Amino acid sequence: MNTFCFNLTLPISKKNVRIRELKNIDFKNILKFIQNNDNQNLSVYLDYLLSIYTDLDFVPTNIDKFCIFLMLRSVSIGNVIELHTTKDGKKAPIIKILINSIIDNLEKNLSGNYEQILEKNDIKVIIDLPKSLYINKIENIFQDIIKEIYISEDAIGYWELDKVEREEIINNLDSYFSKEIYKHIGKIGNDLKHILLFENKWNVDELNDIVLNPFCDILLEFLKNLYNRNLLNYFEIGYVLCKHARISLEYFDNMIPIETEIYISQMKKEAKEAEDREKHSREPGRQSVNVHPLNNQI
Image 1: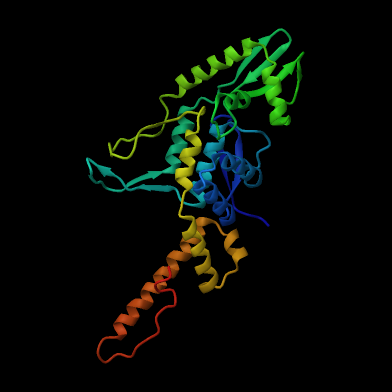
Image 2: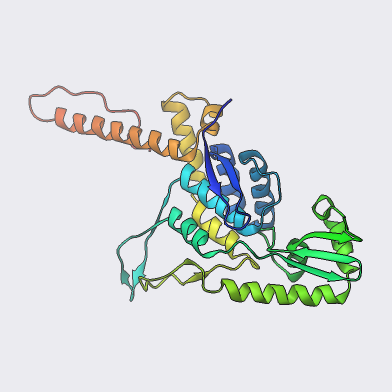
């Protein structure tokens, strides 16, 4: 079945990717991982979603993955982030941030040229940015940062190997490569420290500036905050739509979250109109009318 797709030019690879809209069934699974605080399996699941929602034919860096999921959130759930904050201990106005502005900022400030070639004897190692959104120790960075390894000009197909095989190869590399990888990480960290994912220009109490850092879990934590919703409430929404809008659970699971919000908003509107008609009918001399069945349910 044909589905709506949107395009995004990735800021690091500079390649264009087509992305399909996120379905409720996968959104609910994301919420389960978030609410279980299971970062490792959430990262694995997000990689799986890349395989079914995009036409990628290569393994992108974690910054490119981050931008894909920003765009997916913008199109499928909503482009506006609303933050309820305080300033000096008092309630502050609601802060609204556009997700597209974050993507635009990254596209503007990222050069895309972070690749480096290391050579010693007959071994050549190409390093870049990490691939994984889940980085909890330095060993993960070393595995992720390698793009390809050549021995006597022959590529070993590094990303076709499993994790254990990649780890074994890294452990057998000359110490020269380890030292240069450490330098590479430091240089990129220094180059990116001026790029902010979020700037607390309102000086509110709860927020801090968030610096772009591909060598820790900050990208994954940022995505978790953007996608997080009340999981129980989402199941209740599915129940209400299936019962009162008479749609099937399969149909609900294949809707996108922003469509779900439109359905619920319209049903709330109809319920409110029915309640107003009921109140109006209770005025002296008027006949009572039936109240909308969704009142007090959504």
